[in-house]
Length: 335
Image (cartoon, rainbow, N blue to C red; front, side):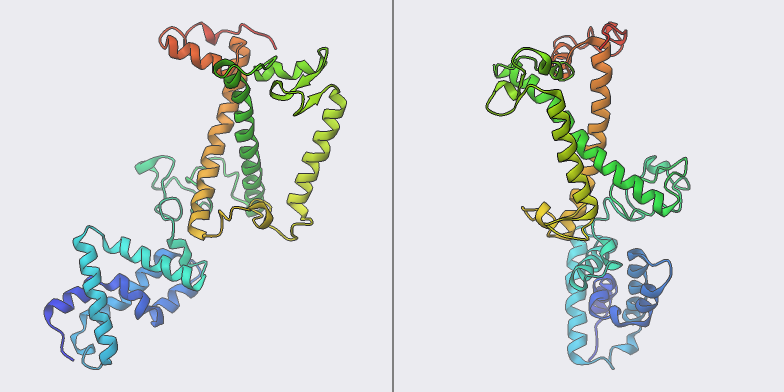
């Protein structure tokens, strides 16, 4: 079967897509997958090189089976159409390798998915000035890796794994804590909910008052009167949850310590690997923001003696007169 020059050009443009149909059986791709420093980028490059040689050697086409030649022509036409609509060869290749990774469940090829937040082309902490400043042990394999480790704290894999787990757990507590700090104050200020003490750093003292502490002002929710009972309950519940997370329990054994899944994911949010990878990035980004927020709550409490909602309301009412550079920076309150 003879190919016209136009079809040859389309086939040349289709090198990335043909990776799936032909180059995945080539020796180039096999060598790339077996290489010590394997990455999806290397796989894409090897596939492109292998198929480019086929697409640019006219003598190879007459010996090609008619069905395979027709398939190559169809793929070339599809890819040429994608390029006309603004898709680059790199984008097409990335999608192809990602799709192949999902289909074969290959962890190597799956690295091509979610390239916005993972891999060598992910955003870096210094943006375009990050070249040469990213340590070699940070390869973009984990969510939230922006290539920043100036002290080499994550150079050791065991230490890195421990720090990752610690950061995620602290991030989750910070998100819950930040929500818990602002919710009572918001309800009391804007919804008229009768909460005796809505400010987060003063709320705990209500347990020593006559009648004890009512959660959200409702005695039917939690009516706490003993600090010792609260302490014991927290130790049992939190300690049990941590032990279960690390060692497993009735809902499953040998679970991932950070993302156990199974009974801990009743909505099935992690069923799709691409969605799961993106959610992990969102979690760590929001968690880091929440940790900084909690630090801000602490400083505001010491500097102003007020809760975060009240501080925010005063700042919105007078941005130039009430901010971190005015009198609020001086300590006015001793907790």
